[in-house]
Length: 139
Image (cartoon, rainbow, N blue to C red; front, side, top):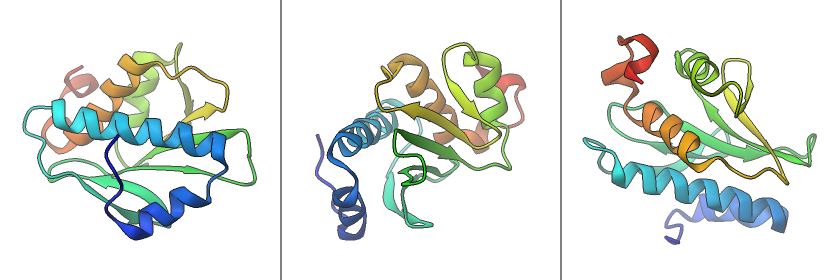
């Protein structure tokens, strides 16, 4: 697992409860792996947006992840609510993923992450600006 180079991001991860931190670190690794496996995706940037670990690439839509104390048994991947991403995820994987409105995929702490589906969602976000005009984002 790749170390977190950004000290502010590392600090946020260090403050999560241990069990949730492991889950979020797994999601982080899926984002990084997907970025490295996706054609035309280069130079992923790991930073904080709204105090949450965030992942950006040129031509993509920001992906964020976080855990909230108000829902201690859940964590989430967040997407820009002004995109077609969440609606597309619902259409493709509504039976496998817990999509919250137009902005998030919610996980419960004991959920098994559906790797193939999550990586596909991440890939769509990372390439969003080149596929946003396509039906179902070209899926």
